[in-house]
Amino acid sequence: MRVAEVMDEIARLTPSYGGISFRRLEKGGLQWPCPTAEHPGTPILHTQMFTRGKGQFMPVTYKPPAEMADDNYPLILTTGRKLFQYHTGTMSRKVKGLNVFHGEELVEINPEDASNLGIADGEPVKVISRRGAVTAKARLTDISPAGVVFMTFHFAESPTNQLTNPVLDPVAKIPEFKVCAVRIEKPGTPSK
Image (cartoon, rainbow, N blue to C red; front, side):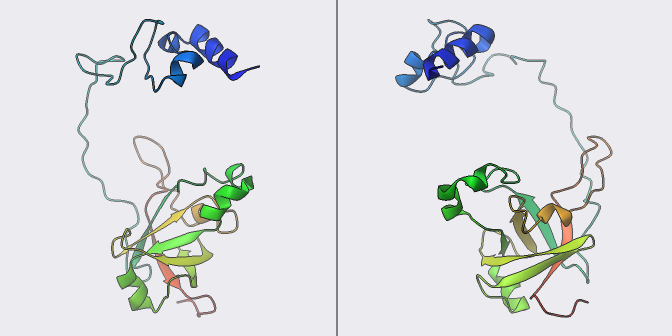
């Protein structure tokens, strides 16, 4: 099946893509909804009214995370993705070219925190939470504010999500994977 045939099938089965074709896409970007071949596309979705639903906004009251930094775990770990890998890397890590850009787990740490811990850029470190420990290389960066470290969850060799807090949000019922207290040590250092 050719690429154009795939796009034709999508347009035939999905009304909001009805006017999008491979031929039209070759001329430049085209944003949905684009229901007919004559439709110019919709660069800004909600200009006069909400397309789906009524757009009801609900204020929320701030609730602190279940786990805060303390004397034993003085840093906050937050997790996320990097451009060159996807989720647990089961597919993207098989692409040699992507691994050139991001081929191993890094612990992004503020230079001030690294200096206080005697950690150099590129040095292996152990990140420890109440649930476990993983080892990865330190990457010193001002992107992480002092007191916060960042890791992805792309690498099975450094299973970051084993560190995160599984406590559930009372409304959304999702685990609190984005905030947990950790400490960082050099491998071989006796744990506290």
